[in-house]
Image 1 (cartoon, rainbow, N blue to C red):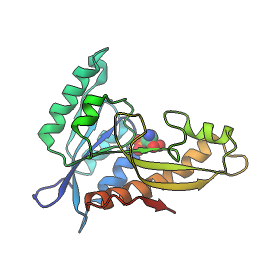
Image 2 (cartoon, rainbow, N blue to C red; image 1 turned 135 degrees about the vertical axis):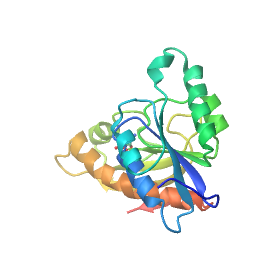
Image 3 (cartoon, rainbow, N blue to C red; image 1 turned 60 degrees about the horizontal axis):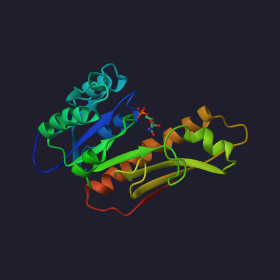
Length: 203
Ligand code: GRF
């Protein structure tokens, strides 16, 4: 399913885990979609998403962060070497669990997206669902945003809202939010790859 022609935007997807968002992105890039996947890159050698990407016919690569202990610059240089050889027009972070430096985010500025499981600007960082429940929020959700030097802080390109139900745990809420992530990220990528940065709102 990787790109063979020159007419489409090339999309590299960075993962660390199961890659369910990556799968929905790859599967969305068919037909008259303006983009095609060119690479799935993981910092975790045994990430479940790598096998799924190969099964979908997308080239894969691994840059293991554990080989760069205390050397973020070295890790990011290795990431950039792999990315540059794939020549992406757009990078989608999809469950990529490494913090990226300003050097990296500036290099790919305006071309790098991330999905985060909260209604940003609320709950940047980790444990988003538990924090929303603990705060007594009526809803949680997810956001796709441009990646900038500020963690989870770039311009918002789309959000999906998910009501919090009585008795919700972080796990039950996360499961319902993930369903929306799988709708939101492909919708935002399609719009972004078409050159339109008007925010998407779901449902
Ligand atoms: C998603 O909830 C994403 O928002 C978060 O990590 C999870 C990744 O899941 N950052 P997957 O690897 O796409 O299945």
